[in-house]
Image (cartoon, rainbow, N blue to C red; front, side):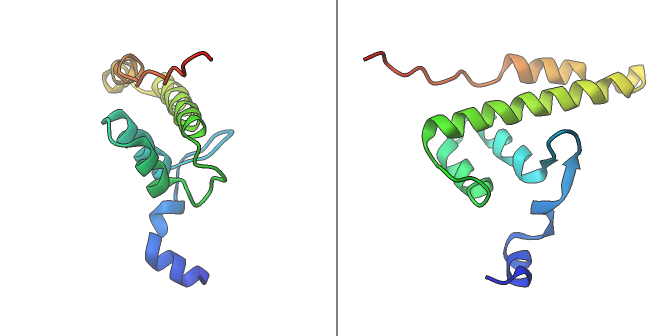
Length: 110
């Protein structure tokens, strides 16, 4: 698939930088985390938003990736919150995101 075809299929927003930091968070990362928080199928969300850049689709890898991205999003939000005016603070939203984060899958002991 040529680069021009890829842009037409996936749109330029899929590679657009949303938050910059040690690791860049793009719109596709936020979309993946949003779907997991809404309780939609994690494997399907991973396939839709992250499969092009990842090497495995193992459920444990997908969950770890979601947890890692959620951690980066929360940290970026805290950094942003520290620079905002008092009336524009987003900390209550971040706290609800932390509180409502999905629980990790517990694998049975063998």
